[in-house]
Amino acid sequence: MTVLRILHVLSTSVWVGGTVVLVFVGVPAIRGLEGEARAVAMRTLGRRWRPIGWSAMAIAIVSGLWLTDRHGGFHRAALDTDFDRTLIVKSVLVAVLVVGALLHDFVLGPRLQRDLRAGAPTAPATRRQLVVVGWLNFGLTIAVPILGAVVLTTLD
Image 1 (tube, rainbow, N blue to C red):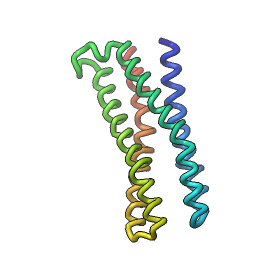
Image 2 (image 1 turned 30 degrees about the horizontal axis):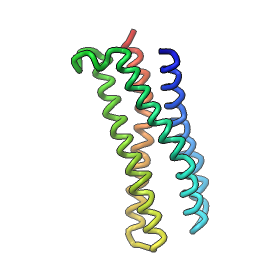
Image 3 (image 1 turned 60 degrees about the vertical axis):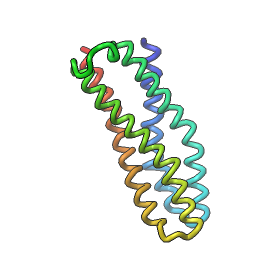
């Protein structure tokens, strides 16, 4: 159980820490670049982060599900305890985060790259969508571990 908890905490630390660094260090640094250099830097940053970030997220989800099972979360009627209710909220937010991250990384990001290369008039709208989804994902990335800590307090 201890190893499983450590794996869960470390994987979420990688996801959250990496996201914070991207949002407050990587992306702002790249924003100072222009044209093709900016596009190449953003694409490179994304490609290098994705295997680390998505692996960390997958490990966090699998280990979280395993921890939930070990604590009986799948063996009781839903909504019976504070643990169950908090875990349901956390699980819904994780699902929204995964959908948002998929949208950001594999739909809007590539669309913006195509729009910018083609000089499409839709590029500013796509960029706004990407930024909104990115900030939503960031908020969820912070909220989910907070709910994880709340879940732990319900086990006492």
